[in-house]
Image (cartoon, rainbow, N blue to C red):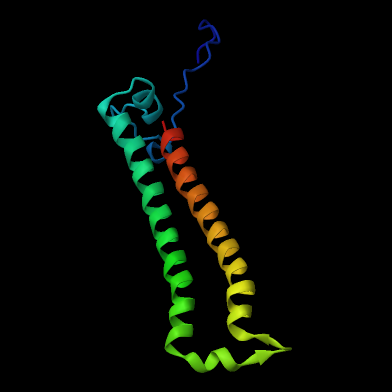
Length: 128
């Protein structure tokens, strides 16, 4: 610098690495699609409904198979009718005490899986 030039600060160019830049296409957020009730939004909602229905049918089907399986088991092996535990016949124990844990476990399985389906859907909607 010469003495007759004023002290002018130099321009500095500040940049960030391109790897940190978020790639953003011309996407339309899912929440907006659903709010406008477009075909895409209806497709997402229908997908959630289908997954919840599939889950309900699988859990109900499994429950019914096991529930019907107990009487079939007792019919196939009639010798079980003669077995007692503390003077209570084993078929009564199976039907009386075995069903409640089955109902509770099916309910817990359904609630956890339905919640997971809804969380996945919510993550999709929140992705914007």
